[in-house]
Length: 161
Image (cartoon, rainbow, N blue to C red; front, side, top):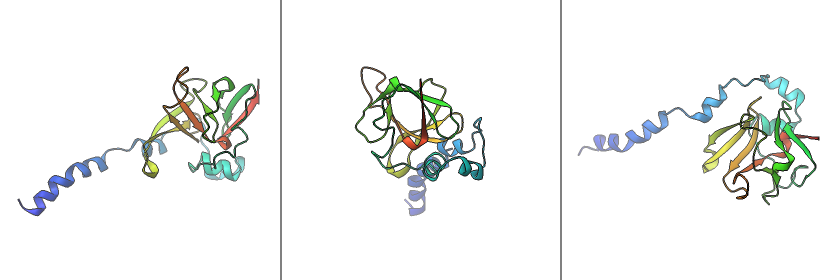
């Protein structure tokens, strides 16, 4: 068999895979209800919040004021103030970031496949502004949902009930 034919046979599945629409890239074009320019986001967020919420960064583990915070209330998006998680869904996952077993409703977060950094994960975005919150994993408390929403604390605000 000619080398060019063999190469075409080997490479065609790879090329087909690369040409498939990437859901993560499609989310960049999604119109979220809250729309702001980069300049507007920089005016309302501090530098850490901007890096996490708008640039998909991650805060260092065990640095969030909300990691071991167990007051009764609602955690909301630091970017747009949309309610995201209730304190009764928070638990200590020993991972270094605030963890919850469920959002306040199924409509407040958007799940997006994240294959960055050589890992397969599910990214969590605020459904209201598109801000990066963290990731969700299927290793949460078995007695509740079994899910662990691992959230960057700088992406959250808290309001007492």
